[in-house]
Image 1 (cartoon, helix red, strand yellow):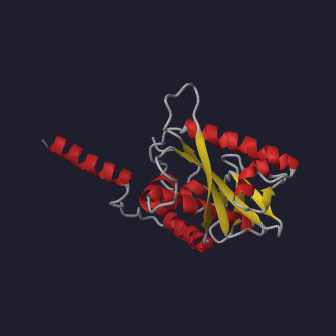
Image 2 (image 1 turned 120 degrees about the horizontal axis):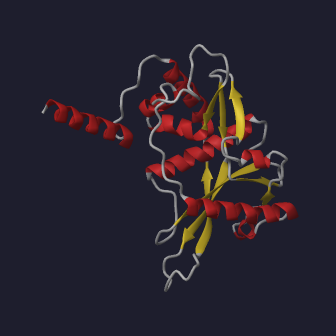
Image 3 (image 1 turned 180 degrees about the vertical axis):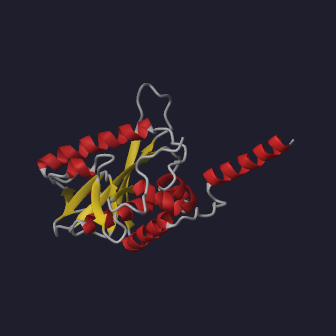
Length: 250
């Protein structure tokens, strides 16, 4: 059964919550976004990446230790970044799922929010948005043209936009703290080893507000957007419906 909560109601004046991941869903496929936010039919959930979550947690523990000391983390020193982890009373809220840093976008009445991994502050008081990532691949880790890497870039830009809307000075350049699991070992031996690098990314968040407006226009319409050929969920639904119709007709 379709859910009845957290749906867009064109007749309501109450702000509607919209997470960073939901806006990303709109970018990927307006059809699936409409089914979810307007009609209550979400895409199947992805499995939880618990090892990645463990790495994220340990990164936070590690950077929080230097935050308490008001010192630069060694990887900042290694990469020549003159900054320290940012201390702020709302940091725990900003990093909590289903809360995060938020902004009420009045033109759409969206309460837009996203949970950030970390924030650093430079001597000039500009904030640096930081996102933790982990993987395991041969060779050096870099941002490519892979769809999920473009999603990582948009994720960074949405965080930058949110912090600017909350009256913070934010550097255009954010960093991915990327842990790459090392496979070239003789065995597991109850231990994983990682090589951690920083990948800088100069963001451009100018697309965020126009996209919020387009997402609102999508939901305000009574017409379901067309399916996208490149969307895996749409492709699955379309192909299974064809097979089911043929089976019933036969």
